Amino acid sequence: MDTTWVPLVEYRRNNIAECVIHGAVSWVSGKNLIYSWGGNVVCYGRSMMKPIMLKVFAEELDPVFNWEQKAISVSSHNGDTEHIRAMKSILNESEMSLMQTPHALPLMQFGIQKRRPRRYYHSCSGEHAAILKGCLLKGWSRVGYTLPHHPLHIAYLEMVRKYLGKDWNPAVIAKDGCGLPTASMSVTQLATMYASLVTEKDNDWIWEAMIKNPDLIGGFNRLDSTIIKSCDGKVIAKEGADGLLGLAILHPDYPEGLGIVIKIAHGWDTQATWYVARYVLGVLGFEFRNPYPLERQKAYIVENVIPESLRKNIEKIQPWDEWDPDRDRWEFEIDTHISYDRA
Image (cartoon, rainbow, N blue to C red; front, side, top):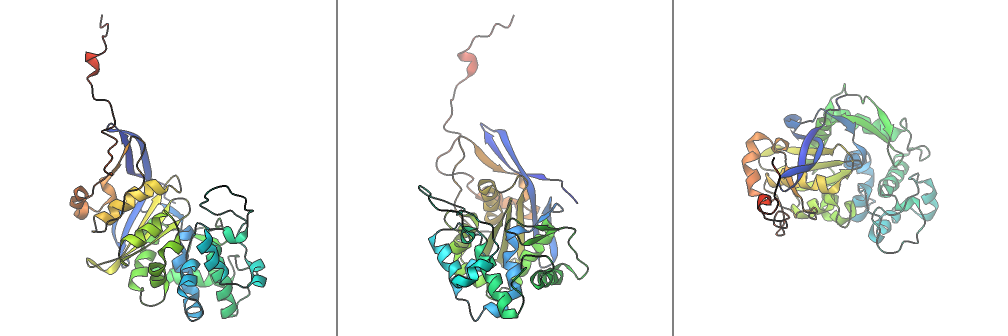
């Protein structure tokens, strides 16, 4: 397995890099690799693969789910009131005990917290609820749905082979944080899967559900929700645990669809991923806001993140907000204030 990470973005103070964020990025159109910067790194798809996994049940769930239920089924939600309402609408009270998400508190919490951990607060509860409903409709056992030999996961692996080739097999199948299996893939293979979301956008409800209800996909101030809302229905985005962001992009220059996956080496870092995504989308003509500013630092993209043919567009992107941390510094010549004994 390739574990060679490459630099993606630098945080500089007075033009000296204090932090270098490493990771990997891959650009795929159709099934063809356009550009890779560290894309051979092998990782797990984690929750970024929910829009692919739920295709197993797309036909069965389509007539019985409303648009909110469809959106929450592919979400990694914050656990706020609207998320829990949509998730609970999928199952009746007696079915809730079948759900095997870990007990958790909401991912994003505000104010004084007096809640107890519950399975439905887990960010993957919408997916688990949809899987339980889908298993019922397919006539599959709902007991053991998190096991790697359950029909769900056999069907999911077959679906992945549809895009990566019939000879593809994961080197490792591991238990994800929510208990479901997650398969190992390279970043480039993950980007290939995301390119397929564009070419098959009209074949099922996945794309439309995410566009119609972006705030159910992540939630307040979440990167994937912000991207979806900013790109006028032409991009769906999905975060995955430990530093993943998948982008499926409808763009006239890429008639076979464009899939881009960003992986941050050190794990989930919304700020770092946000900077990289802003440039990746920016050079393609999409705009969305800056993340919150760094503390007296500036973020500088490593140009290798962007294919060479698009690098000329980097200069069009305003890399920081109106407040500029480089202006909030001392301007002086130190030699005029301090005498040195040079003897």
